[in-house]
Amino acid sequence: MNKIVHMGQLVPLSKEMKLFELIDGYPQLLSIFSRLNIVLPFGDVSVEAMCQREGLDADLFMMLCNMHLDPDYRPADRSLRAEMLAGVVAYLRSSHGYYTTYMLPHVAQHLERVLEHCDALSQRVLRSFYDDYVGFLASHFEEEERDIFSIIDNMSTTLDALFSMLEAPHGDIDDRTNDIASLVIKSLPEGVPTPLRCSLLDHIYMLRDDLRRHSAVEMSLLRPLVAKYQKSVER
Image (cartoon, rainbow, N blue to C red):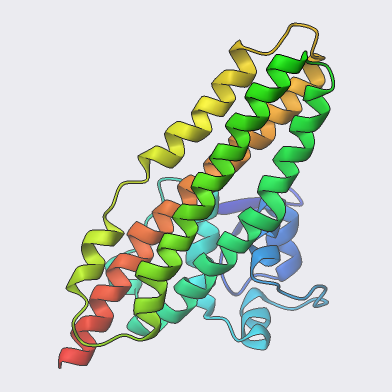
């Protein structure tokens, strides 16, 4: 179980803990609150009470928190319930919006600050590279919405076609994100101030890591939950 240090003591990460303890111990989880549009503050309430108020499955919320904090965490199959499926789809959909309306524009803002210190050729190359990357992600998200999420929304008892789509590798996304980082590290003029370059790289790597977690949720939550749902309707 993940633990946080609070006032010198280890506090278990659980749905019974106070919401303040969760946020204070792991402020990086605020991105989950943002993408799920969870209203703050809640006063001195527990994570479970917050989930009840927001209509969220508390067990699923804790799984998402654990997966966000630990890239190696995978929920046990026995802890997954078919009724969690709609919540996972809602989270993945909201993550698409979080990327397109917040993370990608935020990286673009840092990119523009860097480009102010570049020559015209470097500006054209890097802008074009980033625009192509954003377009690639947008196409990927649209494909998931059309070919996976919309099918789940209107599920029948035959979902075999979904499994092959859910197993499709996401390596292209990772490679393209790393390509942008490599370009920033290796190809920008030395006149770009180091703090600006490092800030841009920091945001690129945050985006890369978040996209990796997104893929893990699809493989370790969405796919097994689709299978559980299929078994439940076949009974």
